[in-house]
Structure formats: structure tokens, C-alpha cells
Length: 165
Image (cartoon, rainbow, N blue to C red; front, side, top):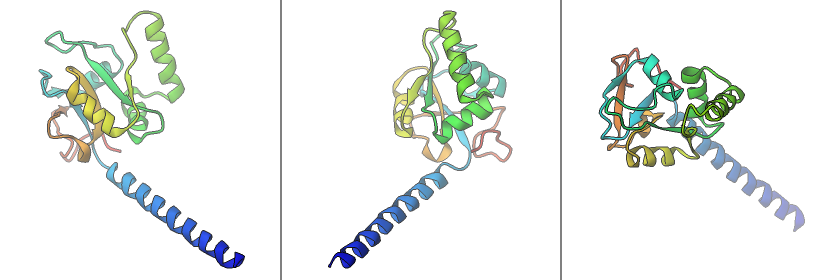
């Protein structure tokens, strides 16, 4: 009976791992494509340039034009959105990113570092709950109550939109 039990365990393990791989592939496919820069729906901005996006996420610009505070929401390390942000917006490695924020906080140039979001759903929920919040998420995951910002005059589904995973 032991060989049969061993074979059953192997089959079950294979099925479980196959399902996990299928789920992971599905999640990865969901996250391919344009990333939308989204804000709280009441943010009084509709469009940013790439330079403005960089200045906001680097905390060089900490307030919206109406003087409300910008709250940065950044995904946790190893997420596709974090990798995108480090590469295309921050143009830093993870180590450089951490050093950058430690230095900004040590010099009292910012009140706080970006808020780390441990899941995509957390980022999506908080951007619509915190006035002045901004983050970037896959276009396919943008909630209906978030404001999608144009970047350089283009929406994420436009042909020459810059921010893509």
C-alpha cells in the first residue's frame, strides 16, 4: 500500500503545483500592459508630464496645485509595480531607493517615506480613500472611482503611452 500512497501523494503534489503555476501565470498576464497613474477622485489635476510624475514620486513636489498634500503609495519590493516604478520613474535600484528615502527623511526634506502597499488591492483601496493619494497600477485593475491621469497628454490605453510593464 505504501507505493500506492506515495504515487497518490506525488499526483496530488503535481496537481497542486500545476494549479499554483497556472494561477501565477494568470496573475502575471493580468499585470502585463500599461500602468495607469491614478489618484484620489477629488485630486484637482487631470494630467502630468513625465517630469512631474518623477518629481511627485521623488517627493520634490509634495503638494498638489490646490496645496493639498500628496500621499505616495508604493507597492512592496518584488511586486511588478515596484519593479516598474524603480526602473521607469525612480531610475534607481532597490538599495538606491531605500538610501534615497532615508536621506530625505534624515535631512527633514519629507514628513514621511511613501506608504508601502503589500497588495495591489490595498493600493487600489487606499488611493480612493486618502485625499491627495497617488499610485500606479495596471490599467486592467483601475477601480471605477479612481482618477486616471494623462501622462504627456496620453491615457494608458493610447498607442504611445510610456508606462508599460
